[in-house]
Length: 494
Image (cartoon, rainbow, N blue to C red; front, side):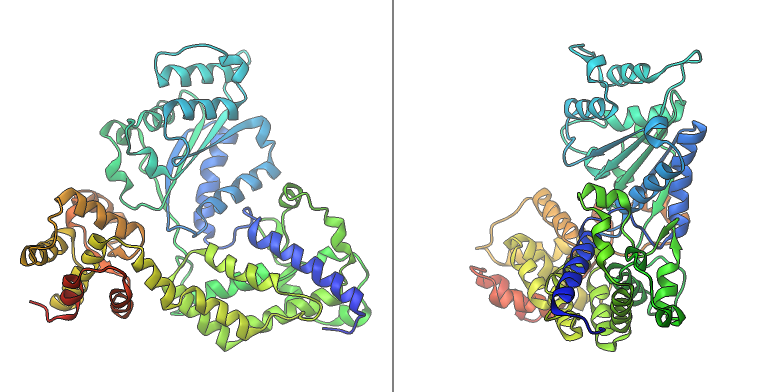
């Protein structure tokens, strides 16, 4: 970077460090990629808010792929285009928190700001309570109601438990009968969530599915996942030149760097690399403090980030990261740790240090520790799948096949305690939640939805995602592991 005194350099690094930390950890609005899916979600919400239509949809995708960020981005865009606070109510519910009808109703009432209207009234049912809330929102000669946008995080948690699916039925029923303009969007990472819905709920749902996958972008060749991470690296670590208000020198004005051109590109009406003002306000950060940054300093910084994105060692590490994990939050944590180490004495991001941070996030130690966290029963099921891979030449297995291998082992070892079938099934489902086993890719979604919904849980095909070498290492270092299981893993397959 260009020459400057130590005090100025320390100030610049402090400001860059602060800005990038906010961008990496706090910015949950900026969303790039998957334009078609974003436009689909935008169209659904906009039609409800602007035209008074009613819609319902489910958004599927693995954890950390950007489902919630996509919705926040759409709501932010709508708030800039219309008076969203005046035209609609946005109600956000989470299945991990709102597990009870009373808690859910209390949260809906608070977010609609109708606590005074409800008061101490007692209602006979959830539907009656919701109807009263809707009637409170109706106004005018034609008794029109403001649009409502319900966002249900952890949608699968609303589908099972001690309570029935009363909330889902009543919300979907309103969109089905068009009692009031309402858009209900469920967010989940469970692909089989439709099987959990009751028939009455299914009959009211629009069956509109939106699939958000990290690498579902336009075909860019076999390096698509790496390209995706490379773009995010540049996006998270680059600085917007518009922060600095000082005049650029004539020499720098003549420079036609790709960095400036990339920075000037607009995404969803906002300058790429810049944090939305609403995020800075939420973090109580004044944007004016960053005006002390010099344009030349920012250009040099962005050029440095561009060089990192072209470094082959970093690209190799990113390829390893996207092979093992697609959770963007893990990638953000790596970048946050890297940015936190910047100082006036160390103004550059060391490529080797960044590679080591990425490699440590996907190292075998972390995967072995995950296997160590399993119970004896769960680890036994993993061993059964390892043997199954050898027997069936790498073909996927279902629960019944794994249970057969485990039962055969348990029967042969009298010292092993017999475990009931429901408990084994629960352990198998926990392995899926930890992504140690993953369901196989089914037929195209257009024709596979109806078929997959008819497949019972016990007969779905799964693949073991944990490498056999890691399982072997976990077995060797697992504390208090019964000797029979260790022998079962190491002995020849029968």
